Image 1: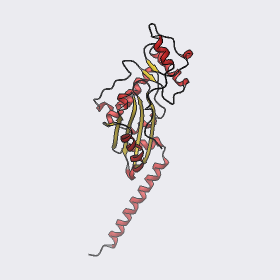
Image 2: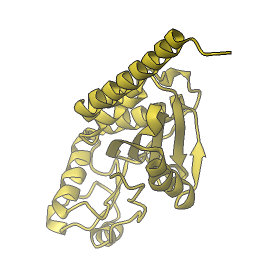
Image 3: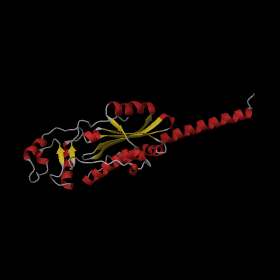
Image 4: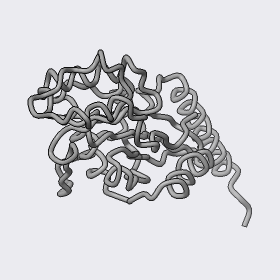
Length: 243
């Protein structure tokens, strides 16, 4: 049967209009800032929500959350969560091609870390609970958190039944990382002394003894001296690369 020329023309015009609209969407997306693009991405379904086991074993680990977008793209955010003290120490966000996502995020989260798949609600609940704990100690989240959190969108943390413990042995525990300068460590220890009181937190840092807060009544001076010269701990202060 011969094809109706008019119907064929209409079909071609519809296809051309769809291609044109898709092209316009791509252009609009690239013209938006990352925060706006993350907000747009919230209308697409979650892809992965993972927490590395280091969060539970060492108190410091990664939380990843992603959404699959059209045109082969993935919106992804990664949070470095310090469950013992500082809350969200780092936050990163990006929108990448699916192949980049698989190689730079999925491969590293599964090959370099032992990770646990969780619900989006649990991932958000852990991040926000860590921030609340740190805020009570006097520490704000990493500045990029406010942009990265946009990808959670309407994910309801209240739907998660998981409960989390913060601090170590019932007290905040600060461990200086490889990127923490002496000045930064001093600032953190001083803040803890102010918000919790000397002797009401633990720390493992390399500090000039003259800059440390005074010993609490009954505090073991030998142990205190050992901590003064201790090297930074928790060598797991690393994570998936974000380009």
